Length: 66
Image (tube, rainbow, N blue to C red; front, side, top):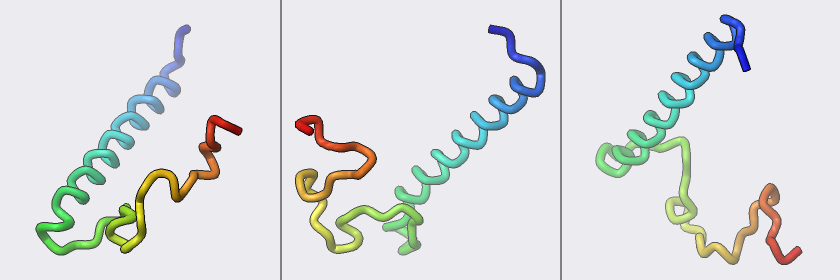
C-alpha cells in the first residue's frame, strides 16, 4: 500500500505525538512521588480504593465468561 505524502506526514507526526505523550506520562508517574506533584493519571491506590482486579470490570472489556 502506497501512502500519499499527507498521509505519511500525518502518521509521522501522530507517532511523534503519541511517543511524546507516553514519555510524558512515564516521566510524570516516575517523578510524581519525588516532587510531590500531581500526576494526571491516578491509580486506585492513590485514591485509597481497592485495586484488586476482580472488584472493577471495565465496561469496555466485558468478562470473557459472558
